[in-house]
Length: 215
Image (spheres, rainbow, N blue to C red):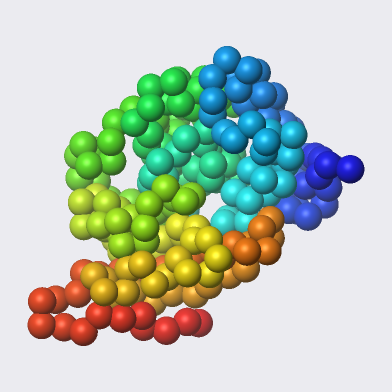
């Protein structure tokens, strides 16, 4: 039996109202997926576990959800889910026009346009702006995400929750960046890990790179 909405509500603890919004999101995803490739086709029947729960599990790790930058948003995971859960403002960035149109359609259908901004552009093209949190799901190495999200975007450098697979996600930024971090097992993939990083700063030319430790 596939993981369904009732099981998601039980495991995530979200309200029925929130779950119903996510259900509309899932319906729109299935409809648009029939015309364009938004997610891996094999994952669509398991949308509540592979996408909704996978994104929702980040919520507990985010220290300050006031302004989230979601890099490589694709079909909106995790950024759009975090907006539905109550993030102050979420900027969704994706360079593929059809995916941006889908994100705009879902945001409008869920009355989230005042709290969601969709940018159809490469992350490098965005003007500098401060964000409290950066999220991404398997779109680049950790070092690249730090470069995009911290140096280029002028974040407050106090939080980031990219997802790394097979527990190796934190190592990718060790030589270029100093940061504190913790690794969390994914609730949806036994091989997956979530890298929760904060106090992110580039390593000075004469400094030593490395991980500051885990809480």
